[in-house]
Image (tube, rainbow, N blue to C red; front, side, top):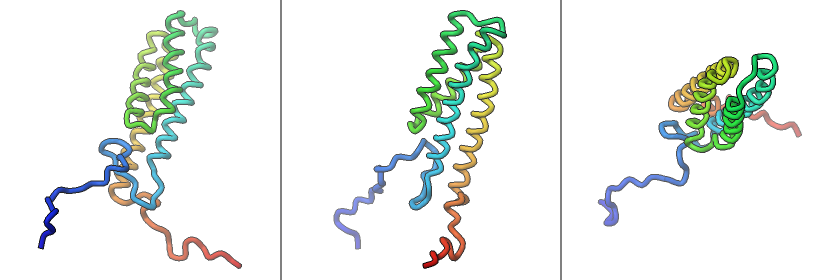
Length: 160
């Protein structure tokens, strides 16, 4: 017998949004792997900021220098990378980071060394995207370490 208020509508819990569209959400009781991956992405952006800011004086002294406009472009992009490190928990944070990678590769027009460094970091981001896809696949299959459970007797009994 059906309840009189039953309309057949499916009610979903919308209190916890997914980390990003298309990515699985960590089950209850399992550490959130997306939090760790976002930390890696933020750390990579901070590392890029430091690298590019330290490279500018070196390129200026040893590499024939960069124009004033080139210096400003690389500096602004570097500062934007630092700012992007703080928005990696947003759904659009990864898109911002990848757009900045493309912009740094285009800075090869400013100086080839800057473009090469941008390409090296783009390879790092390619690996991060590979890891992201692999974590999502493992989550869907229930193969993450925390999803596998613990062996019998874990945690060990505490000695009194």
